[in-house]
Image (cartoon, rainbow, N blue to C red; front, top):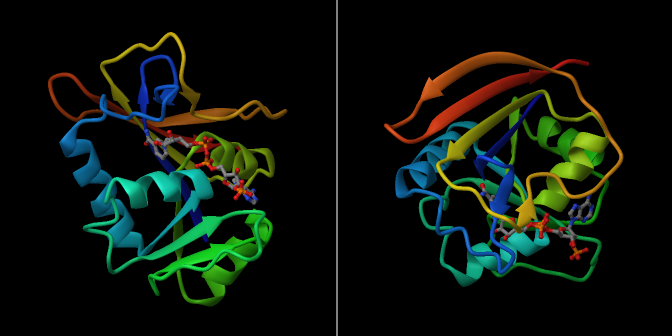
Length: 172
Ligand SMILES: NC(=O)c1ccc[n+]([C@@H]2O[C@H](COP(=O)([O-])OP(=O)(O)OC[C@H]3O[C@@H](n4cnc5c(N)ncnc54)[C@H](OP(=O)(O)O)[C@@H]3O)[C@@H](O)[C@H]2O)c1
């Protein structure tokens, strides 16, 4: 199972403003994310990201993929059959996806979820689509956790005249 972390970030590593606004992420960026999620057939997100995506009607275009929402709350239930709340450990969630036949999994934020996967050494590849923005404060790509990872740069791509994609492999 290949585990891919895919995020849009400011140049200085924020994925949202302090108030959760992600208005700096371009519309074409959302299109690229949807294409990846539809190719792999799944995405794993944190409960806060789920709540915000639901509120902002951002699950459109993702109707055919399995969405796993990590939460410590064992009583949450979804009214959407494609969205499943899971309170298992990240490793267990990946094992279940593999048993269901998925060959790749997409970890898609936010910062707390990303850090919990990174801390356990579960991420194989990272795509960072860098938006031409700096923020003084905001939600970090990885919330404060104790980990360190060495990366190998696989590719740098110009996505548009103003956006760059950094593709890394995580050394294990
Ligand atoms: N730029 C981008 O590409 C992008 C992508 C996604 C999200 N975002 C932004 O990121 C922000 C949200 O990030 P965030 O760090 O505040 O929250 P988050 O990671 O989306 O969600 C945090 C919550 O997820 C659950 N969770 C996370 N890891 C878990 C684990 N290992 N086991 C069990 N539960 C786990 C917990 O839910 P409970 O509290 O229910 O236990 C935790 O409180 C939003 O502003 C969103 O817009 C940006």
